[in-house]
Image (tube, rainbow, N blue to C red; front, top):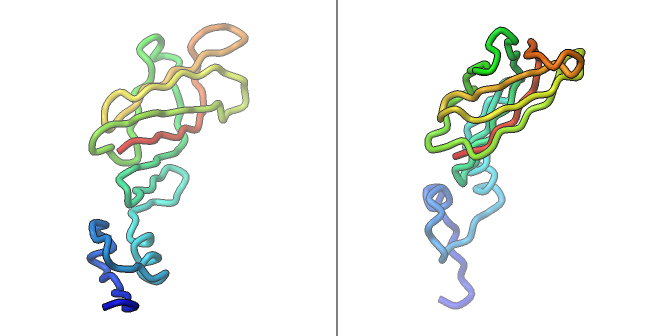
Length: 130
């Protein structure tokens, strides 16, 4: 059937395993719109390739000290959080450290640059995983 192009069904587009049919712009848009997302201050987007991006704001508690403040991601990563970064979002200029704790939580520490002590720190974060 030379010269005849078969159009993929939406199920074929979603599965991503057929290499013999063509995808129309409309079906590609439908595939992308099927992506789960919560576009808010603390939100996430689940990409069709399985990558999950999450973001939000939080507050470290200086009283948590060396143990750090344990907080929840907007949603759980099914497998792993690969990386997480943060920045001071408050009124001071505090130093932050942040690390994934498990698939549902992360730990964050805030320290005052002026006193070098643990302090309450408002921050933003972005995490990527799958």
